[in-house]
Image 1 (tube, rainbow, N blue to C red):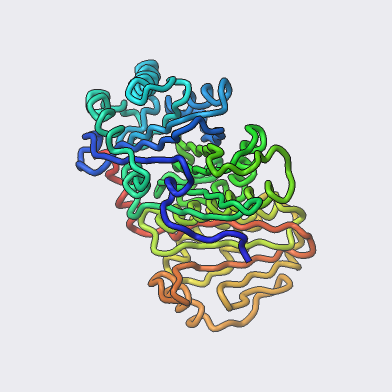
Image 2: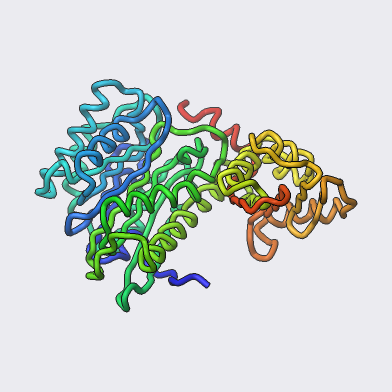
Length: 413
């Protein structure tokens, strides 16, 4: 049983955090497009970023900031323009954005982190951003998390939020998160923006280590379409406002905090996969019997990212051969004579041998999952056992529908 409970408030649930989301005119649609997350005190900051060689200005800017100073007070997020592939002018726009917010908040620019999302190759609409800074700051509120979550959305259909609370040394410690992402989603790290806040006190090095480990198990295990983004950024702020003793090394308190951080990241990662562009269901791949956990995660990622598997799920076709084929090309050695594949409650293959199964019932399971009716869930569960190893891994994805092509065929036109 989890040692925490779900609470209200998402990123403003932890003490000392405020947030805001407004419409500044960055998006042609007129939807909310500018977000601010703010800590009333300096917070320990950790970050994980895209591995793409083509990166947005905000990614390089924040990497430099966190290398020089692993703390922050504010995160500014613009939605509508990715500011990636925009050269020196894009860099200058990022620097100016931080300076404008710093002036408005009366803090150092070194205490500000930036994130952008939108169309690649388009600069931030700086005139609208300049005019939006003051009303954005004025909108900061202890209950502003919901507006912040909506203002970071692009093709997302729903906001993605979570907040949890646990006890450390008898005192409540809270953690909250918001994320965006729907398309251009693939590991290293999944294409998305995510922000986590926490009121625990923790050392800089340990916080970064926890976030990196959590990312490997969650955001790096989610895929929608196999395309890694230019703008992926995950930030985690811990401001110590819970007044608990500082956690400086691994132990029971650190393990409890890391488990809660992983749970927050997993919830957000699954929400991104569930909201994949054109998706009708979430796919969860559970792999066991691998040589080690790294191998188990690799096989799970490969299956979740297979266009053939995703297409079969959309077609409600229990074609286990596509699952076996994806497992076999994951770069992990295993004996195919030990392979076992299960779709929901239906064992399709065991000990490397195909088994007779009710194909109509298995197809109906996929239909019910797509309708969200199977056990009141929309998840297609695929379990793959490779054999005798102790390694395991889980990955999340979604089916590949006609609408994915429609949405992305005219994304900029």
